[in-house]
Image (tube, rainbow, N blue to C red; front, side, top):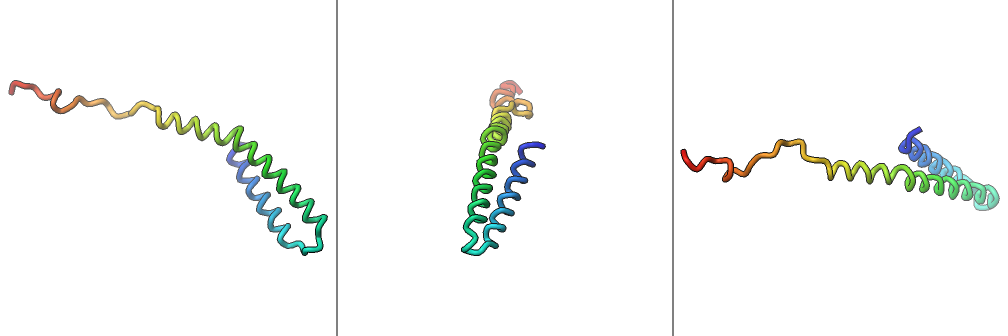
Length: 86
């Protein structure tokens, strides 16, 4: 599974947990606590995947895009390319 797929799955799981949390009544303290602990764990894993896999890959791709040589052929300046004798 690639990093983007993992991150998308994490987003879906955390959203599911938040929906589950919101359905609980104010008296469901233990259930809420369990869900909060799961959310914290999922967000910690999510952050680790971003830091270790996703952000470095984005930085590398950005560096390649900005540092890559131009694919256009170099052209000389018009003043240099013209012959002085016509």
